[in-house]
Length: 372
Image (cartoon, rainbow, N blue to C red; front, side, top):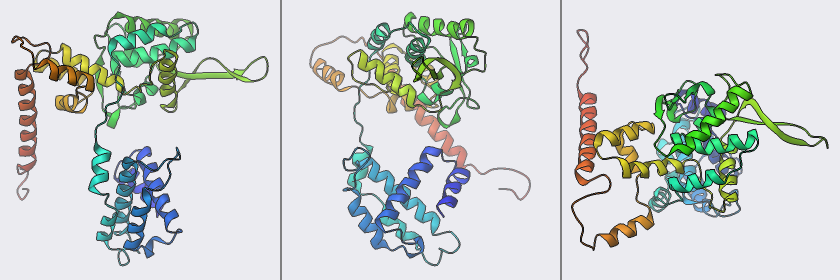
């Protein structure tokens, strides 16, 4: 049944492997708590007991499970038993309503959904980091180019691991995030123009691409950021000897590149995704009209400018304090970023688009006679 459920999640629900793995981990936790009793003998007391003990279970780090893990575990189990209650052989034994006993508490859901401010570097801080990184070997040049390219494009780590040389056009200053070949979010396809973050990141990426194509003989279909090539050294131990023609198989090595660079520079680790927030804050300072903000949002791959503004545009804590203190002082009518009229225009446009979509969905479809 677990195998059938995995196939259902993949083929019928379109879930990614990471989501399927998380669902199977949740089911494994539950089976462990019941002594692996058959699913056909499920009782609501099992769900209640499991919920009560979940907060005391240790995670991979040895500490109790977080509210986010508890919430997602219960959500996966609720979905699994809802599916199971509709399967042959279980319809008469399981009540679909019993799956609701896996619903997480309101308290856990609020804690799990709470926004917590993480470290977001400024453009200047990233430039300082790039200047401090070594660039003697091909591996060091690749590592520095990964961080420079992330700042230039705001690409997610999954896309970074799957880009090919042909996706980058240095002459046009663009990267083609082709959902057929690049691991973009929800396999969206869009073109990203290099963000205006200064000349240094572009110079680093340009030199790196020249290294790949001119010195190492990489072709258009070779990975832009290849995995490290390992070989035996003179002492018969395996060591890094250069760049292979194989792409990274996961995002782990990319995160390790970021971690090593920030630690070497004496800074707190910042994950690749935080660079998208860096670019959003830069856009808030540079954009002066709804059209400019929409273009900035599209450049990040967002379908709605409100996604950029609400999902990534929160004001950092230190800046929030500065703004509140500044409001107590007299000021002129000039503004230094998106003004109120611009924000109102963005919100009104988003509301209009949402209203139009709802109206289109509710409008009867006209077809041949008999079709309504």
